[in-house]
Amino acid sequence: MEKYIPYGHQWIDDEDINEVVKVLRGDWITQGGKIEEFEKAVVDYCGAKYGVAVCSGTAGLQAAYLAAGINSGDEVIATPLTFAATANTVVCCGAKPVFADIDENTLNIDPEEIRKKITDRTKAIVSVDFAGHPCEYEEILEIAKQNNLLVIEDACHALGGEYKGKRIGSFADMTILSFHPVKAITTGEGGMVLTNNKELYEKLKRIRHHGIIKRPEKGNWYYEIESPGLNLRITDFQCALGLSQLKKLDKFISRRREIAEMYNNAFQNIKEIIIPKEKDYVKSAWHIYPIQVQGNDRRKVFEHLQEQGIGVQVHYMPVHLHPFYRKRFGYKEGDFPKAEKYYQRAISLPLFPKMSNQDVEYVIQSVEKII
Ligand SMILES: *Cc1c(COP(=O)(O)O)cnc(C)c1O
Image (cartoon, rainbow, N blue to C red; front, side, top):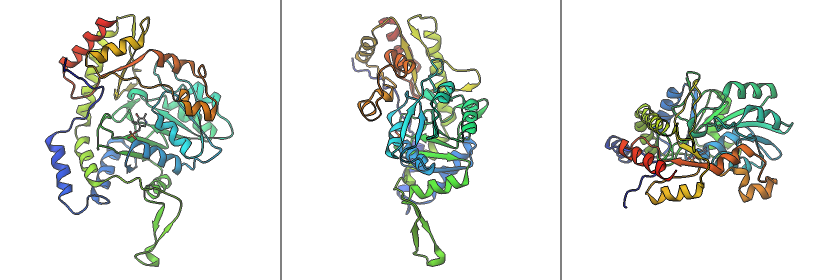
């Protein structure tokens, strides 16, 4: 059988390609005008004030923690159910990720668990909108306010999602997006940090570009290093792709929602399958469709689906169970029982806008057969 359906895939058309080629034929392939144009377009879409485009979502997280002043000895409260980057970048700042268990319904960090983890070293909460389902921002922001913490939203799954009628991008102090090919829109590699705070915005821009500030009053060549920074820049041709992709974002999200609906309808009455839920006050961006299989051997189901040419994945092994996190911070099995229980049973099914109804049906039938 030659059929293969990946779990996620970009959708790039001739219009996208033409926009990239136009930039490549011009003078500025990096540090030109397309970057600001893309930042402005994403900021307008998300209802935020400022955007800083960077070379990946991971770079965005790193820049956000640096801008927040996260440093050695600090603690950042995070969900264990996320991609490694959310926590790794905390460790790269010299700080400690302190995990707080998930709510098993939304699979997002549980605000009550956050409260229990706050110490006098806590500097920030990083929330991850798992599978594209926004977290409980009303509660999280309240907790942050009471305890004088920053909220950093890892929205790498959630571009195009909504919470209580508002698009994600302006709830947290900083919101991080990823434009990796499996995400809502792509620039190849890429990311962005959104903020409403001018001071954080200025810091983010400096961190992206070596910590440099220009001082033309001392000469047009003159600059100073204000703080250590990196090169986290994205290119103009990537931003041209991003601008073209952004025009299709609403269409992409609608299609993702359609496919999720097909899966929901097919699986909601199968007692061996727990489907991902969507609260009625959010609109999920449906980055992934993770089912939980109960009363079945997950590995067997997973491998069977793979053999059928279905690119299933597991999102994610909880971060605290990785060898580095066990060794460095002493985390162990049993620390976060809800995230671990979810992990034992999770399988993400293919979900991307270009997927045909026929492919969705094929996945549904394959899952029904093995269950
Ligand atoms: C994809 C992703 C990232 C990292 O984004 P990259 O662009 O791949 O660096 C971070 N956090 C989450 C939750 C992600 O899904």
